[in-house]
Amino acid sequence: MTSTDPDDFTGYSPDTIAIAAGRPPRVPGGPVNTPVVFSSTFHAGTDVGYARTSVATWEAFEETLGLLEGGHCLSFASGLAALSAVLELVPTGGIVVAPDAAYSGTLARLDALQDASRVSVRRVDVADAEALRLACRGASVVIVESPTNPTMEICDLRALVEATRGSGALLVCDNTFATPMGQHPLALGADVALHSATKFISGHSDLLMGALVVTDAELHDSLRRIRNLTGGVPGPMETFLALRGLRTLPLRWRQAQANAMELARRLSAHPAVKRVRYPGLPTDPGHDIAAQQMDGFGAVLAIEPRASATAIDEMCGRTRLWVHATSLGGVESMLERRQRWADEPDTVPDALVRLTVGCEDVEDLWSDLSTALDTLLPR
Ligand SMILES: *Cc1c(COP(=O)(O)O)cnc(C)c1O
Image (tube, rainbow, N blue to C red; front, top):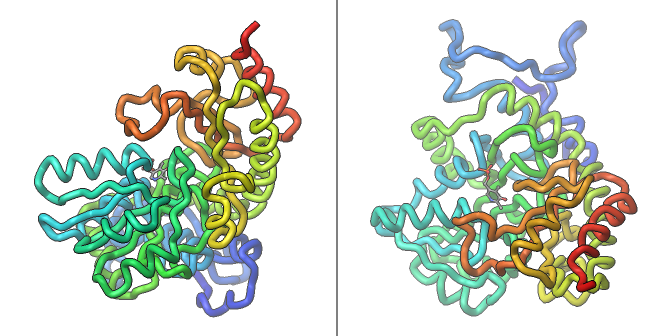
């Protein structure tokens, strides 16, 4: 459906690809955007059959994200639907390696599969390259996040690729926090880049979507079959909005990332803040590896204010611009104490507040946040 051969984009910058890819053929009077088709079925006579298998709007989104990430993309109904499709590849009783702190939904899904004796899960500190190397022995699938949600740990992806090379383990890197603007797991040697497109890719906190990007054509075929049979497919409206959001990812990313760096510096000097985790800070434990494998440091940071959980929750409710809500990656800045959720892993400190930095003016953001943090200081 889309006009372009991926080769047409060789040599173009991601800024250009995000805007120029995934367009319909240029025909006089034709639309500039791929139309949103609200139809579950199609007239007989061609390969196009049923909307669980393939939809033109998906293909436009998949072409664009695939080019940015450097592989073949499949879109899903959510990040967890994308994860679930990958986990279908694990044989019964197979070993899955996962981070000890990661997105709570990913860990809860793995726990549920382990409880049902479907898989066996090994949790590991992904910032500890040696522990990770040992945990990967005999594994079917290794899932990592880098940076991790919400602890902002950095995994040495090159060392992990080395450790799993030739072992037959499928290496899945959840690239939600870094986005294809900030990190290319496939180029570093991972087999699968996983995204919650709900976050930075769509960028406006208005939809749920997920994606998998792979380089291997056979793996792409298997995952496409799994998607068709498990049915976790995105709706046409979501896909249209996600592509519309993806067009401005490079612009949003630069602004949000610059804001995050400045806020990380200022937060490090705020007396109510005990600890800041942001890989862009030269003092951060993950900085050196992040600087080698990432292109920039992203727009999420974690802080631990010096106060009780209750006082921190109240502080989060006192901001005017920052939205006290879960999720991340939107144009609007948000914050929350992660342990307010019952299924957050114990490895996440009680005081940890995840900040997702948006595209507002940084002085306005700082004024709002520092005023709220000041209320935590002893009087
Ligand atoms: C949000 C998130 C997911 C899950 O994505 P959904 O779109 O909410 O299903 C997976 N991984 C990470 C790192 C996330 O932040």
